Image 1: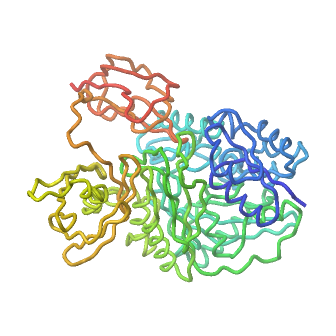
Image 2: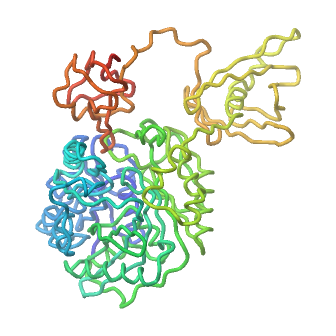
Length: 613
C-alpha cells in the first residue's frame, strides 16, 4: 500500500496529482528548482525538496537528484507527471532500483514507445529516409518528448537543413535528447487520440477518443472528448489499434495512442507512455480519476473487465501566458489575480501573487467543462473563460473564447490547420472602447474633495492609456454633481467600480490597478505619462528582444558587416522551453550585433541592428 508519493514534476500537474493523493490519504512530496521556490506545487505538498539551480537540465531533468530527493523525504513511490522525465526509461529503472514504487509503465514499455522512430517500427511503419521534392511537405519531429517542441513543418527542400538543426537544438534543450526524424506532413488532418489504461493482470481499457486538432506550434490548445463526427467503424478501429499498441509492449498504467485522421483513414503518430495534459476531459466523460487508477494499478489492483460507461461531452482549454498576436510570444510577470467561475474545473499551478518566469512552459491552467451535449459544454467553457478574472501578463484568453465560439469549431469542422487559417481574425484587437474612460474615472475617484471642482469651469482632465498596441486619450470633468464625461453619463465611480450609462444602457466596469498596469473587466490597459517620453528612440532596423530569454544560437558566419536578406533568420531565443526565431526586418547590412550564445536578455533588449539597403 502506497503511503507517500513524490511527484517528479512541477506546476499544475504536480498540484493535480497532489489533490488525488490527499483525497486518498497519501502524503505528498514536491521537488522544486530555485526558480520555483515559492511555486504553488512546492507550497501545496506536505514536504518539498530543493533541486539547486533553475534550468530544467540541472533540476527537473536530473534523474539522480530526484531519486535522492525521494529517498531522503521518505517517499515510497514516484509519480512522473507528464513532461520532463515521464517517458524516460532510465529514470523509471532508477526509481525501481532504489526500492521505490514506480507509478507508470514498465521501463521496457517506455523504451519501446518513447522513441517515435522505434514506435513506428513496432507498428510496422518507418520514417522517411532521404527527402525529395515529391515528399513535401514534411514534418521534422523530435524522437523523444512531446508538447510540440522539436517540431518543424518544411515546405521547401532548401529549408530542411535549418529545420533539422533548429529541431535538434530545441529537442536537446527540452528533453535531453536531440534525435529527430522526418515524416510526411498531412495537411489539415484531425489530431485524434485514445486514452488507454492497463493493469498487471492483462486487462486493457480503451477510454474513448479525444480530438486535439486546435494546436499552435503543434502543441494542443483545445481538446475534447469524445472526438466529434467519427463514424462508429472508425472509432472501433482506433480503439482496437490503441489496445494493440498497449498489448504489443505489455503496457501498464495510463497512456495515450495518437493518430492523424484524414477522412476515414487513421495514421498512427505515436504512443505517449504517460498521463497527458488533456486527461481531464476523459475523466469527466467516464466519471473516473485517472491518477487514482494509476496508483491502484501500481499497487497491483486489477481493473474491472469493462471500463465505465461514457456520459456527455467534455471540453478543455489551455490558458497560456502568451501573446498569440505576436507569434505566440511567452509573457512573464506577476499574476496579480486569477479566479474562474465554479461551473468549470480548474487545474492550475498558480495562485494570486505568483510570478510567471522564463524557465518553463507558459501554461497557466486548464479549464474543463462537462455537459450532456457538446454544444452545452462548449458554451459553458466559453462563458467561464469570458468571465474569468485574469490580472497580470497578457494571456491567450480572448483567443480561446473566440475559438470556442467560431462557427468552424461549433460545427465540429475544425482540423490542425485551424489557426493557420483564422489566427489573424481571432487575434484582432477589440479592447472595450469605454475601458479607458472607466480607468480614468476610477483613478479620479475622490479628488473633488481636494479641490477638483471649481465654480469657474475649467478645461477637462486628460488621461492617456495603451491597450492592445493602440493609444487612447480620454477626457472628464469634476462638476458640482460629480464626475462628468462626454458622451456617457457617470452613474457611479469609485476606485474599484465604475458604472456608466451609454445610450440608455447601464454597464458595470470592475477596475483593478497594479502600478501602471490596469485591468478593466477583461481589458488590459497601461497608463501612459501625460507627455510623451522625450528620450531618443532606437535606430531604424533595431531588433529588440520580444521576450525575456536566452540567446541559444546565432546564424553561422553572422558578424557585423554581413549582408542579410529580409526574413533571414539571424538568431534564436529560448524562452519557456520554446525557441523563437529572430529574423532580419529588411534586406541590408548587419551594422551591430550585441549578443552571443548563452546570453540572458530582457524584454526590449537591443539584440542587433540591420541597416536597410
